[in-house]
Length: 407
Image (spheres, rainbow, N blue to C red):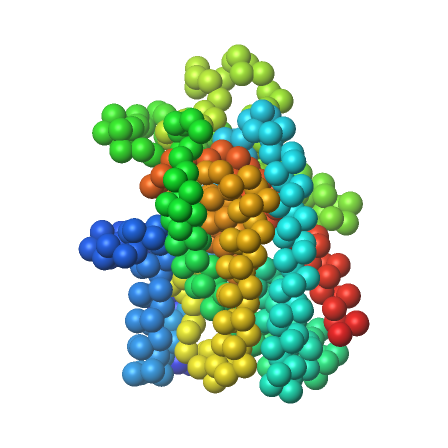
């Protein structure tokens, strides 16, 4: 660690270490506060928000900001989505065909509504529509990456000098709202409609209490790590090939597809150096998924620089409040009924809470917290990441220029 120009820089090793500490703090707080546990608030969200507030207080008291090297965090994201691909079966993908299309259509319609909401609220404050768009799909369903990518163009072409700050502020607070939305929505739907999983199956993320007691051998763990690395290598090659053809996708997306392809195309009885079957849906794979997602989210939230957002309150919080209400209404009145009003639909709704205002990892964390409490939902863990990790970026790339040109 070193301090230079009022910034405390934390290297990658310490950032991961602190991320693990944050995760444990979140667990202890959730264990102590019944409300957080009752509404399935993810443990890394609890810990991450606590630490981001602490770092903001340090900045206010000393003028020293904290910045983290988050390279290891991005590797954890690749790990997590590769496990989701490895855990995917062709049967589930075929079963997810119609629900996937339904969720995609709803999501596209919601993105249009999200932009119209942001533009309308911005107009009430006499602000240009481009500011409302920054409080729409650019930063919310698009996340920090899309906001950072589009802010310079909006600043230059539309004269919004603080476009970057507005986009990051909306993405940051949207992430918080999304993290807090999914669990309560799922609990409300599950309790109101007395929903239960159709079958008792292994979790996609995390390990049940019974399997925790049984234990996982070190070779099981290494076998899962090896499978993840093999899939990630093919995912990297696929990513490079697509980039040469002009299609740039996040690495975790191609690793997700690589895991799906290997799991479903390679014969199950193909000899492996480990002498074991491909570890799809194994307890070790679920454990690694849980570790990767939890630490990723803890690091993401603890690194939020809340002190940079103080001067942007007024219109931004009004836009976010309106977007929050719209997201809940769409989730309860459209997503849940359209997805079948069953347990899978409730878990998908928790994930949609993460998609609508946050990010793909937030959606997965919301669903993971619900599944670990109420039961597995393989369908939700297939269709939600495919919609939010792949299709959303493609649709947003078309929607944003359209709205900028016509509103």
